Length: 540
Image (tube, rainbow, N blue to C red):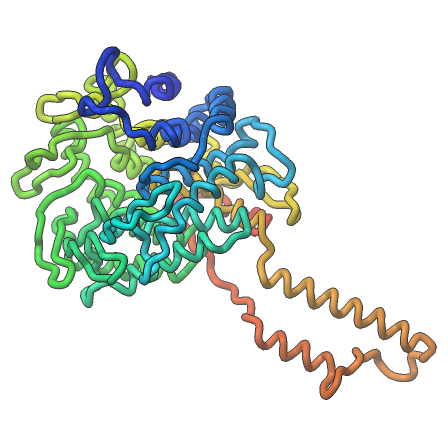
């Protein structure tokens, strides 16, 4: 398979034109934000490790530490910066030790890549300072939100933060990131229509929908994805319940013959009978909630389009069975391959490997050029564009490789793990169950429990310490008394006993509830993910 050689090549060439002597895309100068972020280096970093290129991973980490600076006068997409930069840095940070990088004391609760991720995320926080709590789409990294910035943001640009921001809050101890992400999610939930659908674009100042087309594709997609992945990552029943409600409405109003159309969000009437290539993530998402039959039927529909053109056009007219004008291109997107990887892990169906084989052959035959793999400008005649998107290295290559590599550490079933000592005690990492963000950056869920003590644990310790010191004071005060004087009682405070105070305090605390952990029922793991520093085997 050609992909182990592809990523180093791509890293060298991605910020250059794909053909020597050619200008940048469209004949214009490259976007300075891409250079300033070292975007491709960050986006492809964890791919290097997954493909086994440890030495290049280590070298790129050094390059990033020496060269990345976020204090620059650049207007950046809040959504893209989060999923590519913050997500890429968090993933690389959590994988650093596995890659042989010398980590500092306190890792994974500290480290240079974590500090970079936090710095980048803080640059995004001004975007969330709106009356609704839903963020602007663009922020200037030096000055914050520009005064004339449009308040219209797409749904995905509002609801795609919980995975990265909750991880960042857990690792740094600063709750602000998770808090703003949750507020944004809830505002979208509260803005859904009476029939349970959300639109495509909304005004973040007024909360009014500007574009009322509802579907599972561009502008909405990763909002639904993050409800499911956020629920699994955080073991949050409410997020999963929200998605399941959306799923009912989606199936009722947008699904036709295992295709998903675009409809008017208030009426449910069809507005666009098209399939978008970005929608191909949906079968993979269905597999995460155990809906394998529906996932496979939809996947096979999408696969027929791939076989028709050798790739997925950006828009495909379902009734006509052909591409949509000016939407005939394929920028080497990963979504269908992503779904194949998830479904193959769930079912072992060899049809999914056939898709992987077809993807490798198509990309090699059509897209390979002198210095990388070019976007296909038109699938009808296979004309190429002079660019390679960073998501090709971050996602497409990664999912293809994982589809064909069943023993990769990403697929760990909990049989191996690393015990790490942190300032908060011992925790377990690397046991598997990785959650991919929407840019395919894997997050180890167990890491979220390494750098914090849960409130219940704090209260238990406080109760034990209070009892210990009360007992010590009592023994000092009454050490001359004999056992015949009766059993020991804690000293009473003014007006009431300390035991009554403790009972009253306990009543105010939330009681521990044994909530069944959310899981991915379609994944044939032989052990559960490490949680709170323990590995739970099926037999336990």
